Length: 219
Image (tube, rainbow, N blue to C red; front, side, top):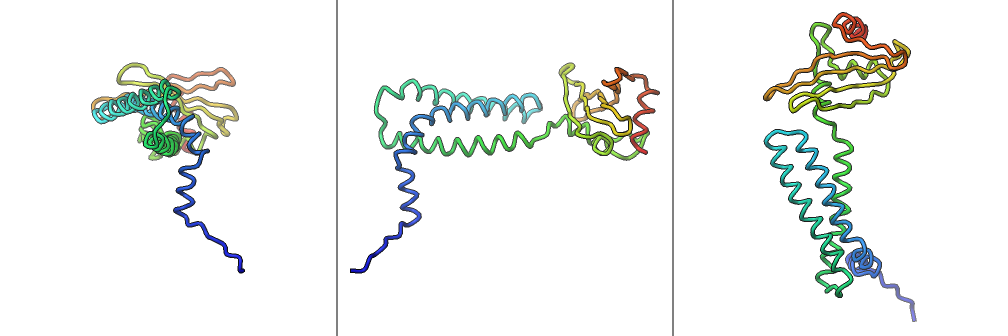
């Protein structure tokens, strides 16, 4: 008698994996944690949106807060009642779907967050000081400072101090450039506030001193 091999169809394999004891166990054990984690990610995004401000920032921020609360409540309720009763097949399927969706959502959101540049930094980089030249701040920083690191600190509701720090080959030491960023309605203004040389402890804040160093970036 000839030996016959039965080839498992893709949908059969997928169905087998979906109903596998391993996935069931993971879903029961970590499904609720995934819900809570999704809620935390949504909350982080809502805080970012609120920080950006504006009508749509606030609207979407509120929506993300509501979504965050919903996921966290669902996850906590599931954790509390997880060991009190056996899950039905429908409830188990729901947990598995939540787990799979949660993994995808968290991965996508994290990629977006990690690659998303703060709009304040984008605004500052886009400015060019016509009195010096046509290059933007972003272009000058990239051309004159190695491995620039951006940071900001809030001054009040409409203004922030934005700083960029890195190594300056021309000066042969680290440099920190501070900008004053202010929003007025739909427009914003960026001014050079000061330039510091942390290694030598020097700080330049007068217009003349700042102009001399800033102009050297155009050479």
